[in-house]
Structure formats: C-alpha cells, structure tokens
Image (cartoon, rainbow, N blue to C red; front, top):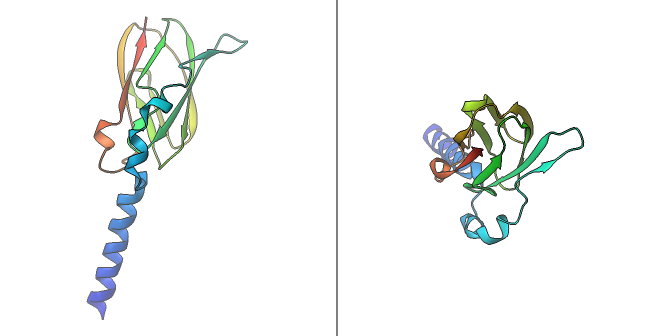
Length: 132
C-alpha cells in the first residue's frame, strides 16, 4: 500500500514539473502572430516601455533595440505557462509577471533568458537586447 502511494505521489510531482510551461507545444510554433507586437514605446516622461510576452518556450520578441542612455521599463507578461526574464548585464531578473527599470548605459548586444525553469524547451528560450 505504501509503495503504491509513494509511486502515485512521485508521478504527481513529475507531472506537475513537466507541466510548468504547459503541455501544448503546438502553440509555440506560431511565430508569425507573435512578431507583430511593437518592440518599444516611449512614455510622456521619456521612459522607453518594452512589453514582452512569454509562452511555451519562447518570447514574443527575439530582439529588442534601444538607444544608449535610454531609461527602459521592461514588463513581462506570461500568456502560457510560468516564465521569467533575466538580463544580467543590467541587473534585471523578473520571475512571473512583473516589471523592472534600468538605464541602457552601455552599447552592445546582451542576451536575455527565461529565469524560471519551465520545461523541455527552457534552454532555447532566449533573446537579445541591442543597445545602439
């Protein structure tokens, strides 16, 4: 009896872990619809606002461009599964839905990644911030 309960609990934990990003990988192949979001808008107070959506193993924007010196507000919204975003070069780490602000004070290309272990495609969930 104890073995069957243990096996059931283990199977439940594994199932929950695998479901972290959802189970519908077919939805992640629709990149044409996901590329229509504007990369950035500028608010009245001069802050460049970037809205990034995350779903099964991909961000809706693979590349984001800003100018050196821009004050940036990065907002992450999870549309499928649970994700985060880490942009270590600017000390940004958002877990789940949320925002972070930073100043793009250096030029170059900076990789961002999903910062919440989300399943089998987690390692490919990347993008880059280009500061011109």
